[in-house]
Length: 519
Image (cartoon, rainbow, N blue to C red; front, top):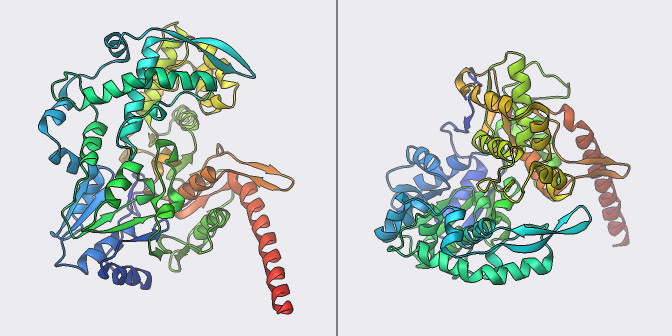
Protein backbone atom coordinates (compact mmCIF):
# COMPACT_ATOMS: atom_id res chain seq x y z
CA UNK A 1 0.00 0.00 0.00
CA UNK A 2 1.50 3.29 -1.00
CA UNK A 3 0.79 6.55 0.75
CA UNK A 4 -1.36 7.66 -2.17
CA UNK A 5 -3.14 4.37 -2.73
CA UNK A 6 -3.98 2.97 0.69
CA UNK A 7 -6.75 0.63 -0.43
CA UNK A 8 -4.54 -2.40 -0.95
CA UNK A 9 -2.70 -3.84 2.07
CA UNK A 10 0.85 -5.08 1.86
CA UNK A 11 3.69 -6.20 4.01
CA UNK A 12 5.89 -3.46 5.38
CA UNK A 13 8.80 -2.64 3.06
CA UNK A 14 11.33 -0.47 4.82
CA UNK A 15 13.54 1.68 2.59
CA UNK A 16 17.29 1.38 2.53
CA UNK A 17 18.84 3.32 5.39
CA UNK A 18 21.80 3.27 7.69
CA UNK A 19 21.54 0.80 10.54
CA UNK A 20 20.13 2.13 13.79
CA UNK A 21 21.92 1.54 17.09
CA UNK A 22 19.60 -1.40 17.83
CA UNK A 23 20.19 -2.92 14.41
CA UNK A 24 23.95 -2.46 14.78
CA UNK A 25 23.86 -4.37 18.07
CA UNK A 26 21.99 -7.22 16.35
CA UNK A 27 24.58 -7.24 13.54
CA UNK A 28 27.45 -7.37 16.05
CA UNK A 29 25.72 -10.24 17.83
CA UNK A 30 25.31 -12.14 14.57
CA UNK A 31 29.01 -11.79 13.76
CA UNK A 32 29.85 -13.73 16.94
CA UNK A 33 28.46 -16.85 15.27
CA UNK A 34 26.26 -17.98 18.18
CA UNK A 35 22.51 -18.58 18.02
CA UNK A 36 20.38 -15.80 19.49
CA UNK A 37 16.96 -14.16 19.16
CA UNK A 38 15.88 -10.69 18.06
CA UNK A 39 12.82 -9.41 19.95
CA UNK A 40 11.19 -7.12 17.40
CA UNK A 41 8.07 -5.02 18.02
CA UNK A 42 5.52 -4.16 15.34
CA UNK A 43 6.85 -2.22 12.37
CA UNK A 44 10.46 -2.19 13.58
CA UNK A 45 11.97 -3.44 10.34
CA UNK A 46 12.58 -7.14 11.01
CA UNK A 47 13.26 -8.07 7.39
CA UNK A 48 15.49 -5.03 6.89
CA UNK A 49 17.49 -5.99 9.98
CA UNK A 50 17.92 -9.55 8.72
CA UNK A 51 19.10 -8.18 5.36
CA UNK A 52 21.63 -5.95 7.13
CA UNK A 53 22.86 -8.99 9.07
CA UNK A 54 23.34 -11.01 5.88
CA UNK A 55 25.07 -8.09 4.16
CA UNK A 56 27.49 -7.90 7.09
CA UNK A 57 28.46 -11.55 6.55
CA UNK A 58 28.93 -11.75 2.74
CA UNK A 59 31.32 -14.72 2.83
CA UNK A 60 29.02 -16.89 4.91
CA UNK A 61 26.27 -19.02 3.38
CA UNK A 62 22.84 -18.17 4.78
CA UNK A 63 19.25 -19.37 4.69
CA UNK A 64 16.10 -17.34 5.35
CA UNK A 65 13.15 -19.43 6.51
CA UNK A 66 9.56 -18.23 6.12
CA UNK A 67 6.18 -19.83 6.73
CA UNK A 68 4.90 -19.59 3.18
CA UNK A 69 6.22 -19.53 -0.37
CA UNK A 70 5.03 -15.98 -1.16
CA UNK A 71 7.02 -14.45 1.72
CA UNK A 72 10.07 -16.56 0.83
CA UNK A 73 9.94 -15.43 -2.81
CA UNK A 74 9.59 -11.78 -1.77
CA UNK A 75 12.55 -12.13 0.57
CA UNK A 76 14.70 -13.68 -2.15
CA UNK A 77 14.52 -10.40 -4.07
CA UNK A 78 15.90 -8.49 -1.06
CA UNK A 79 18.77 -10.71 0.10
CA UNK A 80 22.09 -11.17 -1.70
CA UNK A 81 22.81 -14.33 -3.72
CA UNK A 82 24.48 -16.03 -0.76
CA UNK A 83 21.14 -16.29 1.11
CA UNK A 84 18.71 -19.03 0.07
CA UNK A 85 15.11 -18.10 0.96
CA UNK A 86 12.94 -21.14 1.56
CA UNK A 87 10.14 -22.69 3.58
CA UNK A 88 10.34 -25.79 5.77
CA UNK A 89 8.05 -27.57 3.32
CA UNK A 90 10.25 -26.81 0.31
CA UNK A 91 13.30 -28.27 2.08
CA UNK A 92 11.33 -31.35 3.11
CA UNK A 93 9.91 -31.82 -0.40
CA UNK A 94 13.43 -31.89 -1.88
CA UNK A 95 14.70 -34.45 0.63
CA UNK A 96 11.85 -36.93 1.09
CA UNK A 97 11.54 -39.95 -1.20
CA UNK A 98 9.50 -39.27 -4.33
CA UNK A 99 7.21 -42.21 -3.60
CA UNK A 100 5.77 -40.24 -0.67
CA UNK A 101 5.58 -36.76 -2.26
CA UNK A 102 3.95 -38.30 -5.35
CA UNK A 103 1.00 -39.14 -3.09
CA UNK A 104 0.14 -35.42 -2.97
CA UNK A 105 -1.52 -35.90 -6.38
CA UNK A 106 -3.71 -38.81 -5.23
CA UNK A 107 -7.28 -38.31 -3.92
CA UNK A 108 -7.47 -38.24 -0.14
CA UNK A 109 -9.59 -40.58 1.91
CA UNK A 110 -12.93 -39.05 2.86
CA UNK A 111 -14.22 -39.72 6.41
CA UNK A 112 -16.85 -42.07 4.96
CA UNK A 113 -14.24 -44.04 2.94
CA UNK A 114 -11.81 -44.18 5.87
CA UNK A 115 -14.57 -45.41 8.18
CA UNK A 116 -15.47 -48.15 5.71
CA UNK A 117 -11.85 -49.23 5.18
CA UNK A 118 -11.25 -49.39 8.94
CA UNK A 119 -14.64 -51.04 9.62
CA UNK A 120 -15.59 -48.46 12.23
CA UNK A 121 -18.94 -48.76 14.02
CA UNK A 122 -21.03 -46.04 15.75
CA UNK A 123 -20.34 -45.53 19.45
CA UNK A 124 -22.62 -43.90 22.03
CA UNK A 125 -20.87 -41.35 24.25
CA UNK A 126 -22.00 -38.63 26.66
CA UNK A 127 -22.18 -35.03 25.46
CA UNK A 128 -22.43 -31.96 27.70
CA UNK A 129 -25.15 -29.49 26.69
CA UNK A 130 -25.73 -26.72 29.20
CA UNK A 131 -25.29 -28.32 32.63
CA UNK A 132 -26.37 -31.85 31.72
CA UNK A 133 -24.89 -34.78 29.89
CA UNK A 134 -26.94 -36.55 27.22
CA UNK A 135 -26.24 -39.56 25.04
CA UNK A 136 -24.75 -38.81 21.65
CA UNK A 137 -23.97 -41.19 18.79
CA UNK A 138 -20.44 -40.81 17.54
CA UNK A 139 -20.81 -41.97 13.96
CA UNK A 140 -18.17 -43.93 12.10
CA UNK A 141 -17.45 -40.91 9.90
CA UNK A 142 -16.89 -38.69 12.91
CA UNK A 143 -14.50 -41.24 14.38
CA UNK A 144 -12.67 -41.24 11.06
CA UNK A 145 -12.32 -37.46 11.29
CA UNK A 146 -10.80 -37.83 14.77
CA UNK A 147 -8.29 -40.32 13.32
CA UNK A 148 -7.27 -38.02 10.47
CA UNK A 149 -7.01 -35.03 12.79
CA UNK A 150 -4.88 -37.05 15.20
CA UNK A 151 -2.34 -37.76 12.46
CA UNK A 152 -2.24 -34.03 11.64
CA UNK A 153 -1.81 -33.22 15.34
CA UNK A 154 1.09 -35.70 15.60
CA UNK A 155 2.70 -34.15 12.52
CA UNK A 156 2.81 -30.69 14.17
CA UNK A 157 4.61 -31.99 17.27
CA UNK A 158 8.17 -33.04 18.01
CA UNK A 159 7.01 -36.55 18.99
CA UNK A 160 8.71 -39.53 17.36
CA UNK A 161 5.58 -41.68 17.03
CA UNK A 162 1.78 -41.22 17.27
CA UNK A 163 0.27 -41.59 20.74
CA UNK A 164 -3.29 -41.64 22.17
CA UNK A 165 -2.83 -38.03 23.35
CA UNK A 166 -2.77 -36.88 19.72
CA UNK A 167 -6.46 -37.79 19.44
CA UNK A 168 -8.07 -34.50 20.44
CA UNK A 169 -11.70 -34.95 21.47
CA UNK A 170 -14.27 -32.14 21.77
CA UNK A 171 -14.39 -30.37 25.15
CA UNK A 172 -18.06 -31.26 25.55
CA UNK A 173 -17.31 -35.01 25.60
CA UNK A 174 -17.39 -36.69 29.02
CA UNK A 175 -13.84 -37.11 30.34
CA UNK A 176 -14.15 -40.89 30.81
CA UNK A 177 -15.59 -41.30 27.31
CA UNK A 178 -12.81 -39.15 25.83
CA UNK A 179 -10.17 -41.41 27.40
CA UNK A 180 -11.99 -44.52 26.16
CA UNK A 181 -12.22 -43.09 22.62
CA UNK A 182 -8.50 -42.33 22.60
CA UNK A 183 -7.68 -45.92 23.56
CA UNK A 184 -10.21 -47.33 21.10
CA UNK A 185 -9.03 -45.33 18.09
CA UNK A 186 -5.30 -45.30 18.72
CA UNK A 187 -4.52 -48.44 16.64
CA UNK A 188 -6.33 -46.81 13.71
CA UNK A 189 -4.29 -43.61 14.10
CA UNK A 190 -1.13 -45.71 14.07
CA UNK A 191 -2.32 -47.50 10.91
CA UNK A 192 -3.28 -44.23 9.19
CA UNK A 193 0.18 -42.76 9.85
CA UNK A 194 1.97 -45.86 8.54
CA UNK A 195 -0.28 -45.89 5.46
CA UNK A 196 0.49 -42.20 4.87
CA UNK A 197 4.25 -42.77 4.68
CA UNK A 198 3.90 -45.99 2.65
CA UNK A 199 4.59 -45.21 -1.03
CA UNK A 200 2.59 -48.31 -2.01
CA UNK A 201 -0.59 -47.17 -0.26
CA UNK A 202 -2.86 -45.50 -2.81
CA UNK A 203 -4.43 -42.75 -0.68
CA UNK A 204 -3.46 -39.10 -0.99
CA UNK A 205 -1.66 -37.12 1.72
CA UNK A 206 -1.34 -33.51 2.84
CA UNK A 207 1.87 -31.50 3.03
CA UNK A 208 2.20 -32.13 6.76
CA UNK A 209 3.00 -35.80 6.13
CA UNK A 210 6.20 -35.39 4.13
CA UNK A 211 7.33 -32.53 6.41
CA UNK A 212 6.99 -34.83 9.43
CA UNK A 213 8.75 -37.63 7.54
CA UNK A 214 11.68 -35.31 6.85
CA UNK A 215 11.79 -34.07 10.45
CA UNK A 216 11.96 -37.65 11.75
CA UNK A 217 15.12 -38.20 9.72
CA UNK A 218 16.95 -35.65 11.95
CA UNK A 219 17.96 -33.56 8.93
CA UNK A 220 21.01 -31.34 8.78
CA UNK A 221 20.47 -27.99 7.08
CA UNK A 222 23.67 -27.31 5.18
CA UNK A 223 24.29 -23.63 5.69
CA UNK A 224 26.36 -21.38 7.94
CA UNK A 225 23.45 -19.50 9.47
CA UNK A 226 19.64 -19.59 9.46
CA UNK A 227 17.39 -16.54 9.70
CA UNK A 228 14.02 -17.71 11.04
CA UNK A 229 11.35 -15.04 10.62
CA UNK A 230 8.12 -14.83 12.68
CA UNK A 231 9.59 -17.32 15.14
CA UNK A 232 6.79 -16.69 17.65
CA UNK A 233 4.45 -18.67 15.35
CA UNK A 234 6.62 -21.79 15.05
CA UNK A 235 5.06 -25.13 15.92
CA UNK A 236 7.00 -27.71 17.98
CA UNK A 237 7.99 -29.61 14.83
CA UNK A 238 9.74 -26.63 13.22
CA UNK A 239 11.35 -25.60 16.46
CA UNK A 240 12.60 -29.14 17.03
CA UNK A 241 14.28 -29.19 13.61
CA UNK A 242 16.13 -25.94 14.27
CA UNK A 243 17.19 -26.86 17.79
CA UNK A 244 18.90 -29.98 16.42
CA UNK A 245 21.13 -28.01 14.04
CA UNK A 246 24.65 -28.34 15.45
CA UNK A 247 26.66 -26.80 12.61
CA UNK A 248 24.52 -23.76 11.80
CA UNK A 249 23.93 -20.54 13.72
CA UNK A 250 20.19 -19.92 14.12
CA UNK A 251 18.90 -16.36 14.48
CA UNK A 252 15.28 -16.29 15.62
CA UNK A 253 13.41 -13.06 14.95
CA UNK A 254 9.86 -12.23 15.97
CA UNK A 255 7.53 -10.48 18.36
CA UNK A 256 6.46 -12.52 21.37
CA UNK A 257 3.37 -10.35 21.71
CA UNK A 258 2.19 -11.05 18.16
CA UNK A 259 1.77 -14.72 18.92
CA UNK A 260 -1.92 -15.09 18.07
CA UNK A 261 -1.94 -18.65 16.71
CA UNK A 262 -1.59 -20.67 19.90
CA UNK A 263 -4.88 -22.37 18.99
CA UNK A 264 -3.08 -23.86 15.96
CA UNK A 265 -0.40 -25.40 18.13
CA UNK A 266 2.17 -22.62 17.82
CA UNK A 267 4.74 -22.28 20.60
CA UNK A 268 6.26 -18.92 21.38
CA UNK A 269 9.93 -19.39 20.61
CA UNK A 270 10.64 -15.75 21.48
CA UNK A 271 9.64 -16.41 25.07
CA UNK A 272 10.54 -20.07 25.56
CA UNK A 273 14.01 -20.34 24.03
CA UNK A 274 16.75 -19.66 26.64
CA UNK A 275 18.98 -17.75 24.24
CA UNK A 276 20.79 -14.39 24.31
CA UNK A 277 18.63 -11.67 22.82
CA UNK A 278 18.66 -8.21 21.30
CA UNK A 279 15.74 -5.87 20.72
CA UNK A 280 14.18 -3.74 18.01
CA UNK A 281 11.93 -1.13 19.63
CA UNK A 282 11.94 1.69 17.06
CA UNK A 283 8.90 1.45 14.81
CA UNK A 284 9.20 2.88 11.29
CA UNK A 285 5.45 2.49 10.64
CA UNK A 286 3.79 5.09 12.88
CA UNK A 287 4.34 8.03 15.20
CA UNK A 288 4.38 8.26 18.99
CA UNK A 289 0.60 8.57 19.51
CA UNK A 290 -0.09 5.15 18.01
CA UNK A 291 2.92 3.74 19.85
CA UNK A 292 1.35 5.01 23.09
CA UNK A 293 -1.78 2.93 22.44
CA UNK A 294 0.33 -0.14 21.66
CA UNK A 295 2.30 0.38 24.88
CA UNK A 296 -0.87 0.19 26.96
CA UNK A 297 -1.32 -3.38 25.74
CA UNK A 298 2.38 -4.21 25.96
CA UNK A 299 2.52 -3.00 29.57
CA UNK A 300 -0.51 -5.11 30.42
CA UNK A 301 1.30 -8.09 28.89
CA UNK A 302 4.14 -7.54 31.35
CA UNK A 303 6.49 -5.74 28.98
CA UNK A 304 8.80 -3.20 30.61
CA UNK A 305 10.57 -2.01 27.45
CA UNK A 306 8.35 0.41 25.47
CA UNK A 307 7.75 0.61 21.73
CA UNK A 308 8.89 3.92 20.22
CA UNK A 309 7.13 5.70 17.37
CA UNK A 310 8.86 7.78 14.72
CA UNK A 311 9.40 11.39 15.74
CA UNK A 312 8.93 12.59 12.16
CA UNK A 313 5.54 10.91 11.69
CA UNK A 314 2.49 12.81 12.97
CA UNK A 315 0.17 9.92 13.62
CA UNK A 316 -3.27 10.63 15.09
CA UNK A 317 -5.38 8.56 17.48
CA UNK A 318 -9.04 9.25 16.76
CA UNK A 319 -11.66 8.68 19.48
CA UNK A 320 -14.70 9.66 17.41
CA UNK A 321 -17.22 6.92 16.48
CA UNK A 322 -17.26 7.42 12.71
CA UNK A 323 -13.90 8.47 11.29
CA UNK A 324 -13.94 10.33 7.98
CA UNK A 325 -10.85 8.50 6.79
CA UNK A 326 -10.62 4.73 6.92
CA UNK A 327 -8.76 2.36 4.66
CA UNK A 328 -9.31 -0.67 6.83
CA UNK A 329 -11.78 -1.81 9.49
CA UNK A 330 -10.34 -4.51 11.74
CA UNK A 331 -12.75 -6.91 13.45
CA UNK A 332 -12.18 -9.75 15.84
CA UNK A 333 -14.54 -12.22 14.21
CA UNK A 334 -15.50 -13.37 10.73
CA UNK A 335 -19.13 -12.82 11.71
CA UNK A 336 -18.61 -9.12 12.39
CA UNK A 337 -16.66 -8.82 9.14
CA UNK A 338 -19.64 -10.34 7.31
CA UNK A 339 -22.06 -7.93 9.00
CA UNK A 340 -19.95 -4.97 7.90
CA UNK A 341 -19.69 -6.40 4.39
CA UNK A 342 -23.48 -6.64 4.13
CA UNK A 343 -23.92 -3.14 5.55
CA UNK A 344 -21.34 -1.69 3.16
CA UNK A 345 -22.95 -3.32 0.13
CA UNK A 346 -26.39 -1.99 1.13
CA UNK A 347 -24.87 1.51 1.29
CA UNK A 348 -23.43 1.05 -2.20
CA UNK A 349 -19.80 0.89 -1.07
CA UNK A 350 -17.09 -1.05 -2.84
CA UNK A 351 -15.83 -3.33 -0.09
CA UNK A 352 -12.82 -5.64 -0.02
CA UNK A 353 -12.67 -8.50 2.48
CA UNK A 354 -9.39 -9.59 4.03
CA UNK A 355 -11.13 -12.16 6.24
CA UNK A 356 -11.14 -15.86 5.42
CA UNK A 357 -14.04 -15.69 2.95
CA UNK A 358 -13.42 -19.22 1.67
CA UNK A 359 -13.88 -20.56 5.19
CA UNK A 360 -16.95 -18.36 5.58
CA UNK A 361 -18.42 -19.72 2.36
CA UNK A 362 -17.86 -23.32 3.52
CA UNK A 363 -19.51 -22.52 6.87
CA UNK A 364 -22.54 -20.99 5.12
CA UNK A 365 -22.88 -24.01 2.81
CA UNK A 366 -22.60 -26.39 5.77
CA UNK A 367 -25.20 -24.39 7.70
CA UNK A 368 -27.54 -24.57 4.72
CA UNK A 369 -27.13 -28.36 4.60
CA UNK A 370 -27.86 -28.73 8.33
CA UNK A 371 -30.94 -26.53 8.03
CA UNK A 372 -32.17 -28.90 5.33
CA UNK A 373 -31.56 -31.95 7.52
CA UNK A 374 -28.29 -33.08 5.92
CA UNK A 375 -25.23 -33.79 8.03
CA UNK A 376 -21.82 -32.31 7.18
CA UNK A 377 -18.32 -33.58 7.81
CA UNK A 378 -15.91 -31.16 6.13
CA UNK A 379 -16.52 -28.11 8.35
CA UNK A 380 -15.07 -28.77 11.83
CA UNK A 381 -17.28 -26.23 13.63
CA UNK A 382 -20.47 -27.96 12.46
CA UNK A 383 -19.41 -31.56 11.89
CA UNK A 384 -20.59 -32.75 15.32
CA UNK A 385 -24.24 -31.81 14.90
CA UNK A 386 -27.19 -33.68 13.43
CA UNK A 387 -29.45 -30.66 13.06
CA UNK A 388 -29.52 -26.85 13.13
CA UNK A 389 -31.44 -27.09 16.41
CA UNK A 390 -28.45 -28.85 18.01
CA UNK A 391 -26.23 -26.02 16.79
CA UNK A 392 -28.51 -23.52 18.57
CA UNK A 393 -28.30 -25.54 21.79
CA UNK A 394 -24.52 -25.63 21.55
CA UNK A 395 -24.36 -21.85 21.00
CA UNK A 396 -25.89 -21.30 24.42
CA UNK A 397 -22.92 -23.02 26.09
CA UNK A 398 -19.55 -21.41 26.82
CA UNK A 399 -17.85 -23.63 24.23
CA UNK A 400 -20.28 -22.49 21.55
CA UNK A 401 -19.76 -18.75 22.00
CA UNK A 402 -17.24 -18.58 19.13
CA UNK A 403 -19.70 -19.64 16.44
CA UNK A 404 -22.77 -17.97 17.98
CA UNK A 405 -22.34 -14.67 16.03
CA UNK A 406 -22.17 -16.55 12.71
CA UNK A 407 -25.20 -18.66 13.61
CA UNK A 408 -27.15 -15.49 14.52
CA UNK A 409 -26.08 -13.92 11.23
CA UNK A 410 -27.39 -16.90 9.26
CA UNK A 411 -30.67 -16.90 11.19
CA UNK A 412 -31.18 -13.19 10.53
CA UNK A 413 -30.21 -13.06 6.85
CA UNK A 414 -30.40 -16.61 5.52
CA UNK A 415 -27.63 -18.41 3.65
CA UNK A 416 -28.36 -17.16 0.13
CA UNK A 417 -27.94 -13.40 0.88
CA UNK A 418 -24.65 -14.19 2.62
CA UNK A 419 -23.41 -16.18 -0.37
CA UNK A 420 -24.39 -13.33 -2.71
CA UNK A 421 -22.53 -10.84 -0.49
CA UNK A 422 -19.38 -13.00 -0.56
CA UNK A 423 -19.63 -13.08 -4.36
CA UNK A 424 -19.68 -9.26 -4.52
CA UNK A 425 -16.34 -8.68 -2.78
CA UNK A 426 -14.33 -5.96 -4.55
CA UNK A 427 -10.62 -6.42 -5.36
CA UNK A 428 -8.36 -4.47 -3.01
CA UNK A 429 -7.16 -2.02 -5.64
CA UNK A 430 -10.73 -0.90 -6.50
CA UNK A 431 -12.22 -0.96 -3.01
CA UNK A 432 -13.33 2.06 -0.97
CA UNK A 433 -12.04 0.29 2.14
CA UNK A 434 -10.96 -3.12 3.41
CA UNK A 435 -12.72 -5.18 6.08
CA UNK A 436 -10.39 -7.61 7.82
CA UNK A 437 -10.02 -9.65 10.96
CA UNK A 438 -7.06 -8.92 13.21
CA UNK A 439 -5.71 -12.41 12.50
CA UNK A 440 -5.73 -11.82 8.74
CA UNK A 441 -4.28 -8.31 9.14
CA UNK A 442 -1.11 -9.54 10.83
CA UNK A 443 1.92 -8.43 8.81
CA UNK A 444 -0.07 -5.77 6.89
CA UNK A 445 -0.48 -2.01 7.23
CA UNK A 446 -2.84 0.75 6.15
CA UNK A 447 -2.76 4.52 6.50
CA UNK A 448 -6.11 4.84 8.31
CA UNK A 449 -7.35 1.99 10.53
CA UNK A 450 -10.61 1.67 12.45
CA UNK A 451 -10.89 -0.89 15.28
CA UNK A 452 -14.34 -2.51 15.49
CA UNK A 453 -16.53 -3.20 18.51
CA UNK A 454 -16.44 -7.01 18.79
CA UNK A 455 -13.27 -7.54 20.85
CA UNK A 456 -13.73 -9.41 24.14
CA UNK A 457 -13.26 -7.47 27.35
CA UNK A 458 -15.35 -6.36 30.34
CA UNK A 459 -15.13 -3.13 32.29
CA UNK A 460 -15.73 -3.73 36.00
CA UNK A 461 -15.61 -1.55 39.11
CA UNK A 462 -12.10 -2.73 39.91
CA UNK A 463 -10.80 -2.37 36.36
CA UNK A 464 -10.83 -4.21 33.06
CA UNK A 465 -11.11 -7.96 32.59
CA UNK A 466 -9.32 -9.14 29.43
CA UNK A 467 -7.37 -12.25 28.47
CA UNK A 468 -3.73 -12.39 27.37
CA UNK A 469 -4.88 -13.67 23.96
CA UNK A 470 -7.16 -10.67 23.50
CA UNK A 471 -4.44 -8.21 24.53
CA UNK A 472 -2.14 -9.69 21.90
CA UNK A 473 -4.86 -9.49 19.26
CA UNK A 474 -5.53 -5.82 20.03
CA UNK A 475 -1.81 -5.06 19.97
CA UNK A 476 -1.61 -6.58 16.49
CA UNK A 477 -4.73 -4.73 15.30
CA UNK A 478 -3.71 -1.28 16.56
CA UNK A 479 -0.18 -1.50 15.16
CA UNK A 480 -1.48 -1.95 11.58
CA UNK A 481 -2.11 1.82 11.37
CA UNK A 482 0.35 4.32 9.89
CA UNK A 483 -1.29 7.75 9.91
CA UNK A 484 -4.47 7.47 11.99
CA UNK A 485 -5.99 4.93 14.36
CA UNK A 486 -9.66 5.04 15.37
CA UNK A 487 -10.15 3.51 18.83
CA UNK A 488 -13.61 4.80 19.78
CA UNK A 489 -14.84 1.34 20.83
CA UNK A 490 -11.67 0.67 22.81
CA UNK A 491 -11.70 3.85 24.89
CA UNK A 492 -13.35 2.30 27.99
CA UNK A 493 -10.69 -0.44 27.91
CA UNK A 494 -7.78 1.94 27.30
CA UNK A 495 -8.95 4.29 30.07
CA UNK A 496 -9.34 1.40 32.54
CA UNK A 497 -5.93 -0.09 31.73
CA UNK A 498 -4.16 3.27 31.91
CA UNK A 499 -5.76 3.98 35.28
CA UNK A 500 -4.76 0.55 36.57
CA UNK A 501 -1.18 0.90 35.29
CA UNK A 502 -0.83 4.39 36.78
CA UNK A 503 -1.99 3.07 40.15
CA UNK A 504 0.50 0.21 40.01
CA UNK A 505 3.28 2.62 39.07
CA UNK A 506 2.45 4.80 42.08
CA UNK A 507 2.54 1.79 44.36
CA UNK A 508 5.90 0.82 42.90
CA UNK A 509 7.30 4.29 43.44
CA UNK A 510 6.12 4.35 47.04
CA UNK A 511 7.61 0.91 47.61
CA UNK A 512 10.87 2.06 46.10
CA UNK A 513 10.89 5.15 48.32
CA UNK A 514 10.33 3.05 51.40
CA UNK A 515 13.21 0.79 50.50
CA UNK A 516 15.50 3.77 50.08
CA UNK A 517 14.52 5.20 53.46
CA UNK A 518 14.94 1.85 55.17
CA UNK A 519 18.36 1.47 53.63
